[in-house]
Structures are given as C-alpha cells and as structure tokens.
Length: 146
Image (tube, rainbow, N blue to C red; front, side):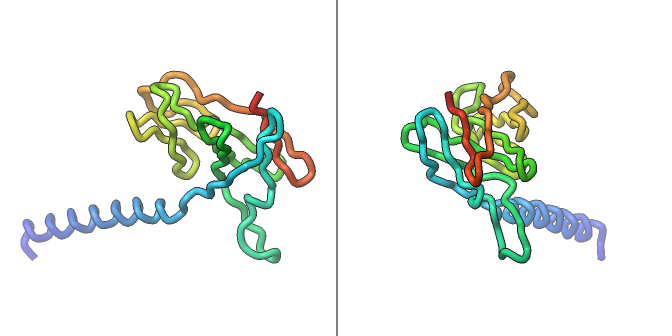
C-alpha cells in the first residue's frame, strides 16, 4: 500500500469512529417525563429511574422533567439511591434551553457546558446553573421549586 492510500484509509477510519461514537451517544436518548406540580414541589416517581427487570435492577443516570407551568424543564441526576440533583435547564449565558448529554448539559446556541452539579465546564457562560433542593419521600422525589 502506498503512503498516500494508507493516510487516506486511516483518515476515513478515524472519521468513521468519531461518527459512530456520536451516533451511539444519541441512542441513549434522555427520558422526558411530564411531572406533577403540587404547590411549589415538582413530584417525580422514583420508579421513573428504573430500567430492566426486577431481577437485574438498573437505573437511568438522569431524566428530564417538565410541566406546562414551568418555563424550562428540570434535569434530575441520580447520584445514589437517596441522592439526586435537580438543575434548571436554562443557560446562564443567554437563557437558551439546555440539552443533556450523559453527565453534562450543553447549550446548543453558544456551546456552554455544565456538569451534573451545575458548575460551568466550558464558557461563554460564567455563572452556574440554578439548582433545587431534592427530598426523597417514600417513592417520590420532591423537588422544591420555590
């Protein structure tokens, strides 16, 4: 194989692998859930995080909750059985609705990225995301929107 053909083949292989990684990440689409709003609390059943059968318990890492009374959805990350984080999906740079990718949130307008804790990972945003207190009450997550 000539050098030119080798470089060309390697380049196409690298592009193919990057494309495959992009599409595989897209296969794990976030779960969207219409959540009930009870006064100042957004209510999310813990069962919404469950995946698989009863024998093999697996859990979603996050889900996105929305309600027509809220201007922006809320992403909820499952840290452990009793620890959850709720973040308003509003970019602190220009107010664009964020998208969730794995363990980070990203702004489609200007590329700001935030961690699952709401901290800025990449700008242009400078301020962290708004977070909400989360309480586990029986089998319900109560997110204090107040």
